[in-house]
Every structure is written in structure tokens, then in C-alpha cells.
Image (cartoon, rainbow, N blue to C red; front, side, top):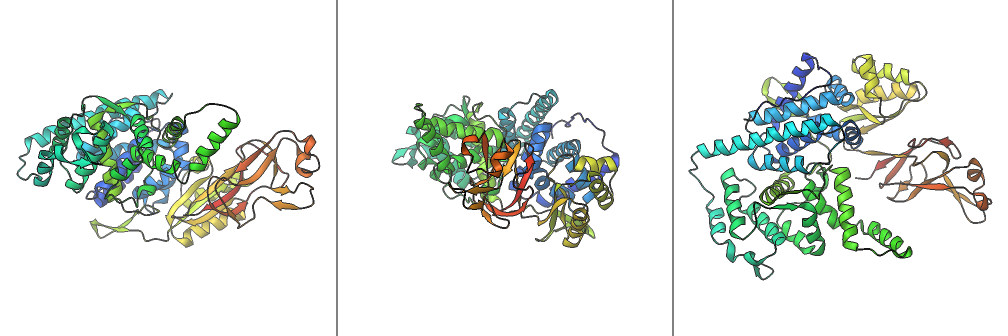
Length: 540
């Protein structure tokens, strides 16, 4: 199904590496082929990796994207794992093969391909011409794949039809929401009600024929299925009528919504953000509006909320919510996202393949408690760290250099405690800053927001008492100040008594809740912009 997906490679990958990756991909697909939610996630992850420029791939790596996505492929093969982390070319090869093999095994369904097409259409375009060419190739591939799916389904005899779905279609005009018949509802409310109904009438298991019935149902209710809609306009309506979100999620399990990445289900993650802006993130909105009021600037609160959602999706899902897509395709994407969260298993880490035991069809999942080695800095001797990693993983010198080129990074993932501890001890003995952690733990690096002299202490107005902003092993709350960076060294030494001499300074804040495990700088030390200053173990 679909034409062969041909994409250019900057670096030619050795045939032995391709064979190892291909085998791991086959194993992963065999493990998850009956799990539609996982197939959706693997597809979305692969498309995201393929369309990631160097700058975007760095962001994804820092978010743990590569580790979470490719743990399923690599298991305990640390050599392949390190190569994937070190070289985006291998990530793109694995992504391409994943999509191709899913298509060959007829696991790419009409609705999933539609959601992928929407994703490609709304992705924030890159300046990188090569990435934009990949967009075009992927777009053509998935359009052809969707056409193949429709033709294949048309040739199959449908003996059994969803009787309940047919009855729902026949009586749809008499269905009521908030005392109003569906046919009289505004467009956005029709979309929400019909999407939720269809999800439950099919129990999340629909065919292409069922989706065509959905298409006719939308048209019968007066929806312009050939016209376009933007997610921005949809969010705009939800902001005005948040109760409609409850109708959308009615009967849907939301346990896994927080574990779904924004680039996997951008449409729903934008809806989740509208909820958070009115609840746990309301303080951000209030801070902005307060400053605008103080400055005497007129503002529209709804537009600020939309802008917050827009920036969130642009920076975390790499999508532009202002781009319009076909209305029917929009509804299908909404259904794919709803089905994904309703059928996903909520867990903090990804399961991954360990090894085959005897029969190639039998796969063993790793148990909880596997460990990662997280390298934060190499210390004074970068070469010592490179040689240690090279010897430990059995990789080439240039591969070890590439692996630690952009810190922090995972050196190995999902290994035994004994194995991880040996590497940690070796690196620490040569001055590296490194963490041994379980795969479900997450560490956050706070970096200097500007260059200057760092103050880790604060004093009262008389300078008689000094306190640390944070304490080692102490708790830190989101948005709390953890340090102050001054332009002048003198200000750090006697901050309170020389307030008149203060030049510019900038507060550094935590963006997570957690426990301080390492403070990497000293009070008064001169630091560079973006230099790590402390590590926080994130509260789950």
C-alpha cells in the first residue's frame, strides 16, 4: 500500500545498522499491531521525527522525545541506542522505515492517514529547504496511501454493518443537546456532539465505510463538509463555551491525556490548554492582564488566551492553529485523538522490547525499575568522558563525541542498575556531572538566563540576615526564584547595602515543581548565558 517512501540521507548508514534497526522495527510493530492507540502514536512520532530540522530535533531531544520514541526499537542494544541519539540521520531512517512497514502491513487506516495529513498541513514551516522537501514527499505518500485504502475497501464486501450506527444516522436530526436539536446547533457544537456520539456508537472501532457514513451524517445536519475550519476558530468557541469541552470528553477516559505528547495529539492538547488557562495556569493570564492594566493598555482577554494556546502549540506541537483544513478531515482528526487517549494505557514511561526468547513471535517486556544514565556535563576533561563512553558502549570515537556534543543527554537507557552504576562511577571519578535514574524519573536543568555574576542568596532590607534562594535537597515550586544574575560582581557581594549602585539584574525562576539534587555553581561565580546552574528532580 502506498508508494515506496524515498527520502534523502545526508549520511549513508551501514547495512548492518539498517538490518538491526529494521529488525527492531518489525519487533515493535508485531508487539503493538493490535493496539490502535500505539500504532497512532508510533506513526505520529515518526512523522514528527522526519519533519524535524536540526534546531527542532535538539528541542525534541531535550524533551526526552528520542528516548521515549526509540526505546521501543532499541531495547538493551546500547550501541544502536547511542547511534540514534548521536545522529538525526539514523532517527530519520528508522522513522521512514516505521511508516513504510506500517503501510506495507495495512496498519495505516483511513482516519489515521487523514490525521497525519492534517498534521503535515498545519506544521510550522521550516527555513530548511531539505525539511520542506520532506514535507512534500510525505504529503504525496500519505495522499496516495489514503487513496489506496479507499480503493481496497471499495472492493471488499461488507457483510456486517454497525446496526446501531445506522440507527443513529437515521435519527440524528432528533438528537438533542442542551434542549436544542442537533440540526439547529452552531457548527462547533455539531462537531463536538457528533464526534462524541460516533466514538461511543462504534466503541472506537470503525471502518472506512463507517467514516463515509459519518461524512454523510455531517452533511445531512447542514455542515459544510467541503469547506475549511481552523483549530483557532474551534478553540475560540470553546473559550466562550467551556461547558462544550465536557460534552466532548463525555464518557472518555482522560487518564492518559497528560502522558500524550503535544505533537501526537495537537488538537486535543490545545483543548487541554484551554482548560488549564482557566484553572492551574490562570495565574499566567492574570499576570499578563495585571501588567497591561498597570501600563494602561487596552486588551481582550479572549485574544490573550488564544495567543497563549497558539504559542503553546507552535512551540510544543510545531503546528500553526491558524491554518485551515477540510471540515470532515478536522472531525476525523478529532476522533483519532479522542480514540487515542481513550484507549491508551496511562503510564509514566514507555515499555520497550528486551529480547526474544526462542520463538521469534514471543517478545518479553522489560520490567519496571530499569535505569538511565543522564550526563549533564563532562567536567574539565571532555576527552576522558568521551573515552569512557566509547569503551563502555563499544562505539567509535567520533560516535562518542557526537553523543555528548549537546549536553545534557542520556548516555544509555533502560539498562540494569549494576550496568548503569558502573558507568556513573567511571564518569564521576573523572569529574563529570552525571545522574543515575530510573526511566520513569525526570530531571530538569535550570540554566542561566543571561551571563553575569550569580547570586544564590538573598538578604533582608538591612542586610543583617542572608538566606539561600534554594537549599540542596530542598523543594522548589514552579515559578519560584532560584537565583539572581547581576552584571556587576560588586552587587553580589553586598547586595543590600549598595542598592543605589545596582546595575541591571535578572531573576532566574524554576519552571517545574521538584527537589534540588545538584547546585552546579557557587554564590558570586561568573557564569555564561545558558550555563547549567542547578538540577531539579521533577515531581511526578
